[in-house]
Structure formats: structure tokens, C-alpha cells
Image (tube, rainbow, N blue to C red; front, side, top):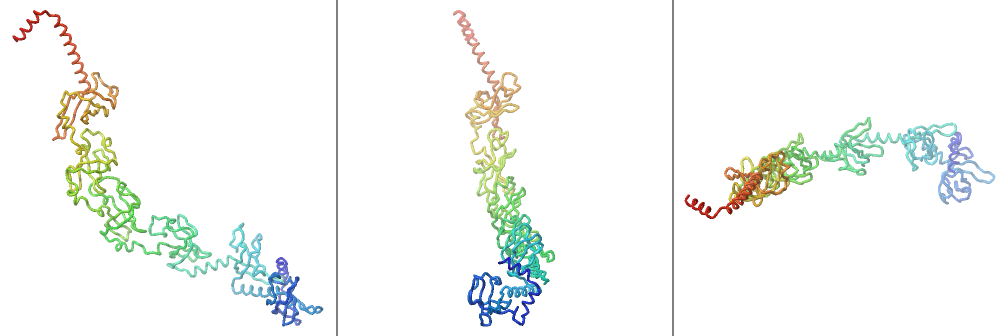
Length: 568
């Protein structure tokens, strides 16, 4: 039925249109209101002027026949009079078409929109049915539909850009693009700088986020305008689908572009930085990042302050900042200086904690033993962290009672150690510690029990070019074995004669213990011990030989020798 309607509309000439509009003397073409009286398979009987004299064929209906019921009011055009049957044939479709044509033409002249539906596509565009009656053409360039995409089937609003009566029908051209352009123009005519607008986030990129402000207009929120906190990514603040409120910060009505800001919906926090963070106040923040020169503390969105490395430790302390704080730690800091114009705030970590050197003599007395962590191992000694902001230095001479070639061989970074406080310089904020003095000096016992010439046992601990370091059993002190004292033979390579871990007997050939000069050393020898053993063996052999010779002397000779000895 729809195809027949379309064909009839196409075949409807202008003469027929005017004939329908202009009533004839016989009533043909006149428009009347009728009432449905009865339904038949081929049409509807209607009452006109109170008489049962109208027949509305099914082909002249606007809707399917099943959609009508007795009592409905319809407008019809008189088509002809059937004098034989005594009734008038009428058409609802033609009356409706005349009404629609008038409405569409008026919409064209007044620039109004009309409702229609896309019913098919052709090479250059789409066929459109306006108000279910008038055929129109939608050019592809005016559709806004990408080629190859399915066209919408739901009713749409169109703008008529051409309406021309022709000999056979009408030439009607419509546009969706024109409506869109008018909507865009209207939007930009009603928006101004600093205006507050609402929209929905439709896409997020590294450079910013696009926000749909209307059916046709989208605005851009640059990444820098997302938050006062520049360290935040866009995706940390908004997500696709979020409904947002933003301020218009850029507007180009000629190019139809609009820029938005989320952060400017709130006041710039740096404008009131002096009031929020007065100098000398202590505030809480979160460690954001750690740099070689200090670390940054996040105070609130958009506000980060710097704790310079000089404001971390009390005294001349050299250790890794990461041993004190880590990103994400919540800490207290003291405000030293604020500069709202340059967006800077200086903070102090150590001053928020307090200066431990003010009460150092009360809390840490000379001679007391403290426990700490070896924060840094240096060639000259080790820095021991007693508290988070208080450290002391252990010189290499105070690491061990024994000789220390490399500090890291005795103390490892991160190792917990005990140390005795041996001096405090409150003015310069320095403390000297001793690890070795936490135990009794083993050289005291060595000096009492070991002498030059003593024979002792020990284990080879290290080998050097000049000799070897030996740990002496029973005393836990180290002695030096020169390369010249390793063997009675000439030694070119000491490793050919001794190995680390070997146990040996040694002879003490030098021993110095002078605690006033802090001198403690012992030199041992394998060579001298071997020579002593050779001499003892030779002496033993000689003695045995002498005993044999004595047994061969006569009794008279023995008495004579004894008398001479007594005389002497």
C-alpha cells in the first residue's frame, strides 16, 4: 500500500493539487469533515453533512483500515459523485496530502523543521518521507552520515532547503547538516568566556579530554587544566562517561572551538598560600618524590613543597635520603618560606622533629653505649644512625681492636651495631663513636700472657703482597706474618706456601702494646719457629751423642774430671 501511495504522490500533478484545493460547483475537490459510520473490506462508509452519502475506498485511506473505528472523525476531499448509487466518493489521503503540502511549504518559507523518516538510500543520498506523506531527497553531503554506515530508522527532524512545485509533483530537498549547523551557531551565540557549562566526558587523551556539551558541540579540557596538582594524570581525575562542570577559558566563535578548565572551578591554592601555610607552622604532608638535592612533599592538590637536603639532618650527616623517607610516607614538616608569586614553598623536616643536639648531653652521655644502624660505610670509617636525625661517626681506628684494612670487611651497610660514645661536639653537632670499645681490650691479656719468643697458634685470615694476617687463637687478636717469615726457603709467591683458613704454629718475634699511644701490634714467624725446632733437634742429637761418648770413659777418668770441675 505504501508503494502505491508513493506512486500516486509522484503522479499527482499540480492541476490535480489545485483542483483538490479549489471546490467545484458540484462539490468536487471540496474538503469536508466526515464521521466513520461503518467499516467494509474495501473501504469505509462515512457521514457528511449528517447524511450517509460518502464512501472512502481503502486506497484513499491514510492508515490501514484496521486502525479506524466507528465514530472517528476524518477530513476528506470529494473525488466524484456516483449518481447511480446516490453516494459521493471521497479521499482522506488527498485531503491529508493537501494539508501536509501546505504545512511543508510553510515550514520551508518560515525556516521551520519538519519530521520525517529516511526510507532508503541512493548513490548520491537518501530518500526521505516527510510526515509519512511527502517524498523528499536528502543529499549525502547534507546527511552527516558516513558512507557505508547504516542510516537511522527512527523519525528525525529535517530542514527544507528547497521546495519547488513542478508540473508533475514537487521537488523537495531536505538537510540534517543545516539543522546541526544552526544548533552549533545557536550554542556559540549563547556561550561566553568564564561561563560555567556542563557536559559528559567522551574521550581522554594525553593532551586533554573532550567533553560533549551538546548534541553537536564538544569542548577540550587541556591536560594542564585538569587539576591544580600538575603531577596528576587526566585519568586520575576524570573518566569517560563522567558528568563534569567546567569553566570556559577559550572561545573561538568563528572556528567554533571552545576550551574548558576543571581546575578553575576552584580557587588557585597559591593565591592564599601565606594564609594557609604561615611561616613556622608545622603541617602534615606526603612524600611525593626523592631527588639528590632533597625531597618534595605534597600538601594538597596543586601545592608541593621542597625539603632541601640541608633541612633533613642535624649536623654534618652524609647518608641516603631514602634511609629516612620513602615516597608515600606521611610526615610532618615546618614551613620555612612561602612564595605565592613563584609558586614555591620551602619546608624543613629536621625542624619539625626538633634539634636532638639541644639535649644531647642529657640523652647521650660520653661513655654510654648506643645501638644504631650502619647507614654509610666509608674508607675512613662508618656513619652510624642512632636515631632518625642523629648520627655518629666511627673512625676506622675505632672499628676493631685488630688492624682494619677495609672497613666494609668488618661493618656492612644496614648492619645493626653497638658503639660507645667517645666524644661529643655540641657546637658543631658531631659525635665520635667506637665499636671496639664496647668490648674489653683483648691486648691487655695478650700483654700479660704473651712475650717475644712465645709460641702460639693461629689461623690465616687474609693474604697480602707483604705477608698474611693471622687471627691468634685464645686471644682473638690479629698478628702480621711477613712474607720473609713464611718459610726457611726464599718465598716469591706467598700463596704457594700458605692458604687462607690454614692453622699454623707461630713464634712471636715482635710485640708492642702501648695503649697511651693506641699502639697494638704483633709480628709472628713460621720461619723462626722452624729454625728453633731445627736447633732443638740438633741439640737433642748432640746430647744423645754426648751421652754415648760418656759411657765409653773409664771410672778413673770420670773421677778425675769431676775433681777438676769441683776445683774450678
